[in-house]
Length: 262
Image (cartoon, rainbow, N blue to C red):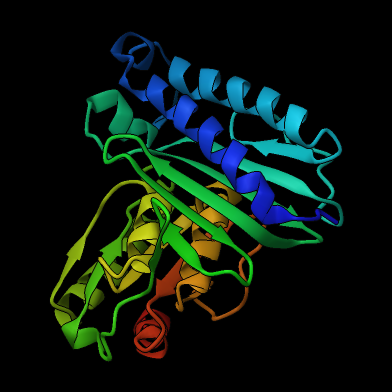
């Protein structure tokens, strides 16, 4: 069990901010390897993961490491685990569409207890410690007060690496669009979850995500007063990944009912 989680926030904040500075290296962003038809890794992804993996090993050598750009076979969630997405929004990064983030979470006995998401373009660092609330650049944040989907703005992610799920995704998108103020699509799940936590959007839906996409953002939403689950309303898995439905809280049941009705 990790003691004094809040004490980790200072050095972790410094580390993710340092890593975020690499996002502006356009030469590195242009060094691309294709993992799938629409799934990419750049030298920025690799460099950020290497930098943070080394720093985390210094801070807490006893904690396991799970990162997007490595084989994570053997990770045991009964013990503490760092969960890192070095660049959430790699396709955005490649195109210079300035919505990407470093997402880092700490899981302890299968529960996320600490989360940081750093958006270097906006210079916004979102942080949460279990039971201590959520913050952006040190200031407390809360989910919105929207009571119905009809008064809501909802981010619906398309996840281009999950093309088999595209028909379902666009049914979700149309159904939410028809019932809300409008929809948005940031292209980085961690940022979308932070926007739910900060009350900038009222909900978020996306399929085919991995644990590193949502682990930190999930805690941020929960600590800000919102809800996060699968479309079936069950808890998210840290080992398998899957679809995510997040809300400010009040619109959660209605949003889930819309998704489940399709």
